[in-house]
Length: 160
Image 1 (cartoon, rainbow, N blue to C red):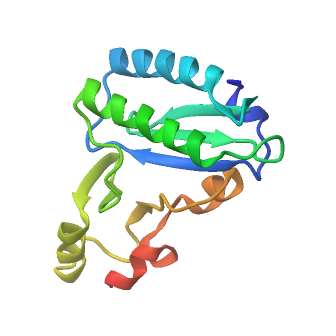
Image 2: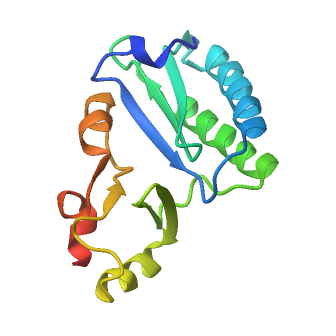
């Protein structure tokens, strides 16, 4: 069951899919329609899942699930991964590669491979104060407080 992102509790689980490029307005509209359709029919053991999505900075697809109502099962998680893989294929975008870093460079969002980001840290092209996106956050509360942080306050700190 697709609901508004705002109605889910702070404890709702989140999955963040960072795109390797920005989405166009047309792509956002189409991806939004497809997410609404997917989440409307998303189930675990025959029970509807109360879930929501949002697209942030034209770059991140975030799906959230109210696990207090019904937890995702292995099959429902598999279904969500297949859905994300379909989006990757249909929009020629990478969403599942966790070996990358998205960070702010002024008003611009940059997306680099993890190895490139490490080299940039070594070369001081990015610093501990660089705002990074910690896509390992677990729930909405962490999304709101620990997602966009200085690199020194994230797992990225180990590169400095």
